[in-house]
Image (cartoon, chains in turn red, green, blue):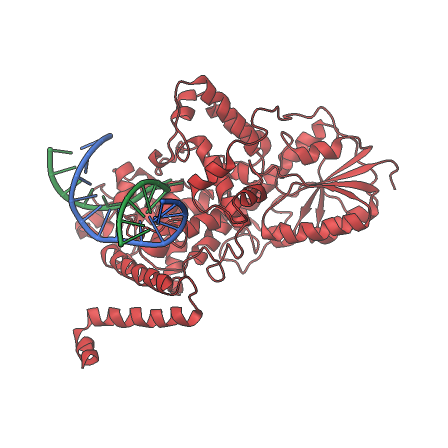
Length: 541
DNA sequence: ACTACGTTGTTTCC
DNA sequence: GGAAACAACGTAGT
């Protein structure tokens, strides 16, 4: 057993050296420092029952991104005379064993607002406290402390962006100097009987070559890690005009050679990049230019969106569900697994939608507006499938999937919360055409359509058979027919949304399971009447 | 009851 | 590229 004072730095998110207050505290006034990451099999080990390669909780793309981030962290720690201690098992149990086995008197980890960590961290803190171990758990993942904002708002989270921005104001540390580097770290103490490993490879986690082939790693352009994050940041910051004029809604979702955004989201998700440091960098640029865009559309505005969703998610019980979620409209979504499967597997027959879903599967990332299109299509726009189903697919496949932001955006796009104008439906045909009339994005992600003339590429089913033959793509054989007709499906969705909203209003939000069941039946009856007037006559008599 | 406001729709016409 | 028409939601404040 080591003598002197030992600190344990537990990494979860916050996989970085720069602006990492927990690491700073752990390394200060300690004889020994144990930097730990716990490989949780639930998050990392293969689960072959899942619909895509990966674990029960994460797709392989995000697991790979995480491993790369860990390797980078390990190599940074080694440069400071330390290393990352990788352990395996249930994080709660492993941590308790570490605390018992090593002579730890200080436990440091970044505060996390997600329900999973809320309950886990509570248990650990109470164990530490009973063992006389000091814990330090700073809020460093977001710009603001969600709890502070909620308190300022009288106990409830603000539900609009503008009210959030007003409440939040400027962060207290806005003009203070962040600690961007560490010169050295205390040595690692005796690890006793704990089993320590290097950062594993994907193969060492138990994945097979065939699973790796499905992933097609060479096709995923984003590499994890703090170094990569800072490199990306430093590539675009000197382009002050681009930073100052950034306007999110004007971005091009079809740009893929050079994505039209920063693609820093996965790095922020894992904390490879500090949101506070990013915030200060943006402010530095803004100070140097005459004028710049403002939230919500500006680049800084995007960081505030992130904090907005973290705040609402933290202050809303059952935020990730429709039932029992006080801010979520109760809507009688369909349970049609065949439609969900078609969407998930990129065979809806709408090339714009399918191309986006292929990019999601291959890259684990798509442009924000592309996400809007497929989320709207799955839910209130066309298929009327439950947003929780789409959320699950995104949560698995996105490398930047973040619990608060992903759920928040699905609530938003499905018109379940925050946003209610369900008549505004993204067209699976014209929206993409606006940006990419030639269909280059579709041709890249759906090579089967690469020779389709641009007149038909967004609606290949309208191409004459001779054109389809020449393009070597027969609709219904080489590329699927559409699962629904957009005009009739979106009209039907509008009607259902209208009825559901009326029900929610009538019952003042307390819609029961039975109420939804009744509405489903009513919607079905009304639909039959429209299709078959005879039933209508019978009913009227 | 009325009004202002809210990330980011589509189509048509100029 | 911009403007207007289309059809029109809920929430929060008065």
